[in-house]
Length: 256
Ligand code: IPE
Ligand code: IPE
Ligand code: MG
Image (tube, rainbow, N blue to C red; front, side, top):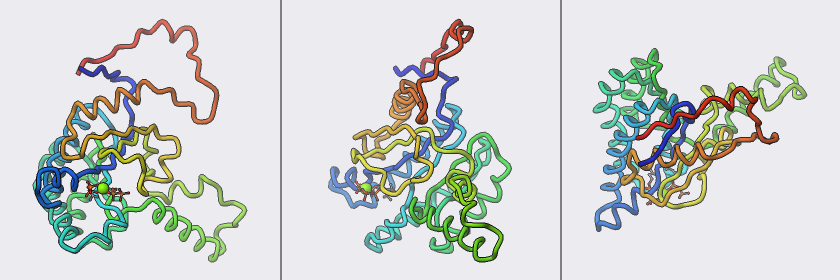
C-alpha cells in the first residue's frame, strides 16, 4: 500500500515510456508486440492519473530520433497511435480530458494527423486533465524552434537581442505552455532523459524505475508520486520553513 498526500500532488507529470522492445524480446515476440502492450499501459495510466487528480500528463510516445528506427516498426507505431486516438476518443471526451500533441506533428502520416486534429479540437474545452502526447518530439528541436522564432522577431525589428531572456523562450516552448513538469518518470531502467522536455525539466524531480513500460501499473505511478512527495524542492533557494501556524495543520495522507 502506498500513501499519497492528495494535497501535494505533482501538477504536471511527464513519462518516458521506455522498455516496450525489451518486454517483447523477453517473451520471444516481435518488438511491435511490445508496443501494442505499451499502448494498453497508456490507456491504464491515463485513467489512473485522471482519477488521482493530476492536472497534466505528458507522455513521450515517439521521439524525433525514433524516425530512424526500421520502417516496419515506425509504421506499426503510427498505426497503434491512430488506433489509440480512435478507440480512446469517447473515454477522453467523457472524462473531461483535453488531448493535445507537442512535437513536430507535420511529419506524422496524414491518417494520424487527422485523428489527432479531430480529437484535439473536440476536447479543447475540457479541463479535468491535459494529456499531451509528445510525438515526433525532441527537446533540443523544440528549443531550436523557439530560437528561430525569436531570431525572426529580431530580423523584423520587433525585438532587440539584449531584451531576450529566459522568459522570452517560455511562451515559445509548447511543452511548458501550461506549466513545467514537476515529476519526470522513466521506465525501462535507463538513467537518461533522451531529449525529453529539456527546457521544462530544469527543476523537475526525477524518478527512474526498472519496470518495463507495458508492466507499469497504477501502483508504480503511486510509488513515483510518493517518492516525489518525499523530496524537498528548493529551486536553488534555501530550505522553506513553514510558518509556525501552518505546522499545526496535520498532513492527511490518503491510502491508495
Ligand atoms: C519505448 O520503448 C517506445 C518508443 C520509443 C516508441 P522502446 O521501443 O524504446 O523499447 P526498448 O527500449 O527497446 O526496450
Ligand atoms: C525515448 O526512448 C523515447 C520514447 C520513449 C518515445 P528511446 O528508447 O528512444 O531512448 P534511448 O534510445 O534509450 O535513449
Ligand atoms: Mg528504448
